[in-house]
Length: 502
Image 1: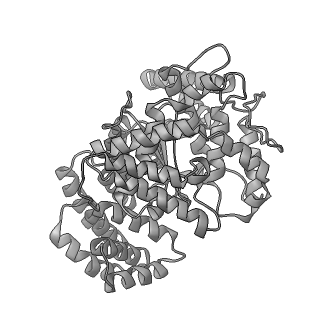
Image 2 (image 1 turned 180 degrees about the vertical axis):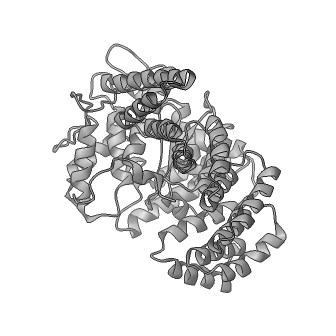
Image 3 (image 1 turned 90 degrees about the vertical axis):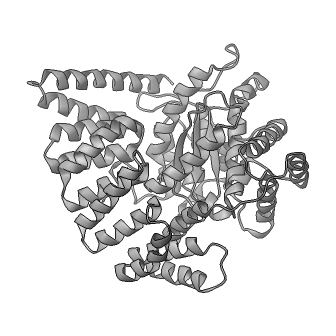
């Protein structure tokens, strides 16, 4: 299956990343300044311009306005950054974020979660209920509570509306903008993989980072709210101090500190304050989630140079003394599948299946073994049984749809995804696979409709309009479908106009 991100009109692979980032941000109206002046949102006839959250006369921006701006921000961010297409990982992160949000003082607990494929340790929250997690956070946080402490901290910023409040405090200074945040987070999410990034000057990076920095008071408040959220959710509040300690060590022993640390500076005093605050909470028995370590195994597999190398790494862990034997076994099975060794993978996975035959992660791995063996009937039957037991499970729905697709059961996949797209309207991966399936099932109008929705969610409005116009031309004799597409065309034109106004 083609990676959904590859269908986006992305930056040229021939140019250095620094030049590509300059050009892509410039196209969004976010031209990087060569000096240390913070980035300001600008507009031109072709670019997209994100707004300042407020101005010298408007006061605090409303939550409704934040929501609208956040959704536009998310669309543009997706168009610039490679996000994860791992449905099981996406489901895990969404469950963790939304579970913590239930115990936070956040008024609107509906959070849109984006998982960024990047090995740097970073997480961020954007006004309007957007939470971003770099896959590198899993590699850095040693357990689920430490991972959750970072999420809870970002929820603290959102719940206290630090972005909007900072406008009031800086009325007479350069106001932080969503445009600057976008530039900073795109820079962070594209760093680490290409030497061309070094061409971006330190002053530019500093200007971008400044858009994400909060005051010391804001950070203390987010620490307090985050630790309280951890405790209320039944997690170990000591994990926040532990995570801060690891971050501080990173500044001493790592060539480059984690991205998160660049915008959330940690000091010995901050660590001491976090520990003191957690000591005032009720004692919580530390726990270590196996599911968290299984997600880490999935990410670690993706970071290895080859599947064969991953096999060696997980095999060594499984043979040694390991606190998370199931996660090491699971990782080894996935690595063996990726290496094209289905028989070995089944031998490795079987003890896990014997203990928990209905666990979605294990069923999906077992179905992947079937797919490698080209036993499509076995894979689809296995996944259907699991989905019947767990209706609506995101990873199982996408797994079964993908299995039907690979089996050539395009109509079955089409029916599933058409229904699921109404449930998960804001998931680009669902629309991408639906478009592919429509095409192979012979529904060309459906291809254009699904492609349009995919491009809308990725902020590529010109492509969305092209597909909708194609669909309209093809449905002149189908009044109902034609009317729906025409209305969606009007919606997208308005979105595009709002983006340019912003």
